[in-house]
Every structure is written in C-alpha cells, then in structure tokens.
Image 1 (cartoon, rainbow, N blue to C red):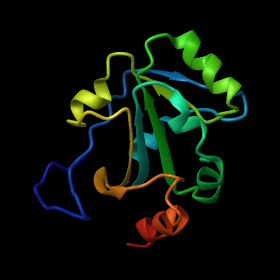
Image 2: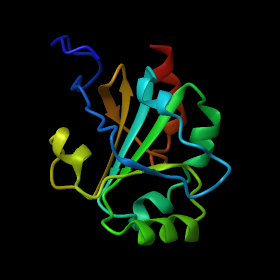
Image 3: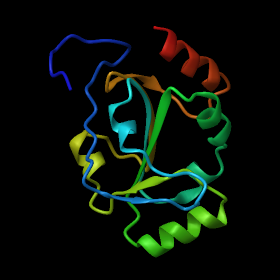
Length: 146
C-alpha cells in the first residue's frame, strides 16, 4: 500500500482494510478470496447492521459483470448467527466480513452513517456508489478504464 499524499479521483483518501476479521460465507457457491484485498479496483461497503440497505440492493449483476473489481462487505452486526440468518433469508450469497467492533468504520473515519459504499482504485476513494445509482455499471466501467 502506498501512503503518499498524491490525491487521485474525487476524494483520494486512502482506505484501510482490517484483514484479521472473520469472513462469513452465506452460500457454498461463493468462497472468499484473500487476493480481493490486493485488487487494484474495489467496491468497499460498510454496514452497521444487515438492514435493508444491503439486501434490497441487487449487487449480484455488478459482482458478476465486473470480475476485475473486488467487492468487500464489512458488516458490524454483533450477533454472527443473526447476520448469517439475515443474509440467507435475503438470498445474499456473496461473502461478508464480520466486523462486530466496527474496525473498518474506525480505521476510515466514517461519519455517522449506517451504510456507505465507495468505489476504489489502488485503495483510494474515487467516488461513492452502489446499485441504487442508476449508472452504477457505467461508474464501475469508468473506474477500471482510468
């Protein structure tokens, strides 16, 4: 990871990824890959709880159509069994990083939000984005073309 002050993108802030957390794989079909932490392009998502914000958005097309982009979901739900149950109830099959002590939140100085997602290039924020944005796929394509 580079720590220089050269800003890139709209925000440019370096994002820190706590890696010593438990990964939950709600489905046998998708296994977590630690190389995702090293990916040049990422979508980093933080959620306080599993709430509707993750499960009502259809992430799967974006994940399937953008193989060069790693999708990292940090969820701070305290109870892992509740987290697993909610993921399965909502057919969310992508692995998530269980972050009960809000390490991602604290390391990245995220304000008072319960849900936020960033598009990243070289671990630096380029812009915010998620499937609720009408041009999310175009934003992902632009991210990987820069």
